[in-house]
Image 1: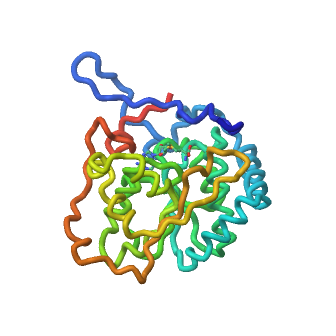
Image 2: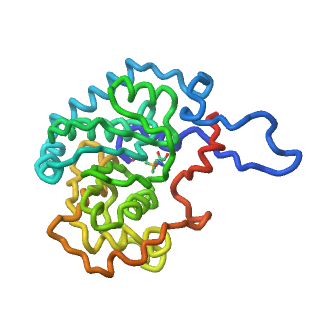
Image 3: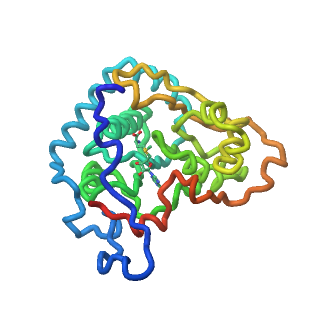
Length: 280
Ligand SMILES: C[S@@+](CC[C@H](N)C(=O)[O-])C[C@H]1O[C@@H](n2cnc3c(N)ncnc32)[C@H](O)[C@@H]1O
């Protein structure tokens, strides 16, 4: 454990599984995230002070900018970001409460500046509170409203920033772009493919992360050296990209079925679940 704030790692929400018969909740309606009920002021769990969060974010950015960790990241990563036109960030978590998520947000904003990228960040996490959505918008970032479970097509060079995101989201990004014209547009900053493939039996990965398994053999991986002050923010994180010189075999483009995951293995929050997400 680092000294970073872990108290908010388990967001204070619960899923309501629709029940039949008399136990069904009466009029709790379909509320339930900041996205489908933006005017409902009761859904914010804490009265988040925008200024405080913004200040904390600035402090995190300044600390990163002065760190040897960030300097080394830029040296290793920026050369691969030259043509990036779009930045999509998923699974950040509750950055107003959790310093891990806040440093991760600071990181992508600083990296964008250092790499001279003009793209705004496009952020989505189903657990974002209304305040967090507002803060991101005030910071001139874009907040996506729909849960597409990571299935975004990369029409242009796109940096997908998925810090400690469920691997099924990474798998879905890869599936959506598994075609010659798109796959080289996908740059993933996420948990190491090497660690995923080394730490899970192949048989299990074929079901839950088949496209990561396939990508691991072709993508280049640039690990971030985890020497930041807090050890659990950027650990096990790598940049992954498919060099344009890498020509995959014709057979690599076959068998591109949409992934489906067993309910008991689900790591991501599905589109359907968002409908019944209740913030306490
Ligand atoms: C393990 S947490 C990581 C949080 C934070 N980035 C960290 O490193 O502590 C995984 C995050 O993925 C988010 N997530 C789950 N399903 C998602 C979806 N369909 N789209 C975007 N984010 C999702 C969760 O809400 C959660 O914030």
